[in-house]
Image 1 (tube, one colour):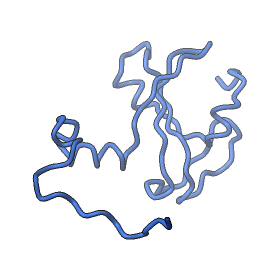
Image 2 (cartoon, one colour):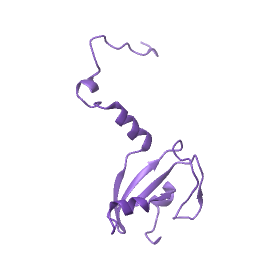
Image 3 (cartoon, helix red, strand yellow):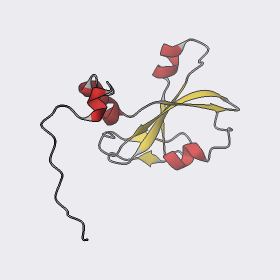
Length: 113
């Protein structure tokens, strides 16, 4: 039997299964997280880093990659990296964040400092 391309109708009985289980308690918060990107923690020989992926839509300025010293133009997806265990605290680590090409960050040799 051929498949139909028509969307299925929602039941009039109530909310979907995800909303029933409480996973979508605050949909605005989930939307903001999806737009900004979710931070991930990476442990490397040179420290513990927080890495956030910047999508092409959110990249609005020019940055210089510390890995290759080349320009990251507006509209290019990349990663933003800062040190989680900075010696002067978390605020100092965030203020010293750097924008890297994704390939430069994943292929770094830990000699960039």
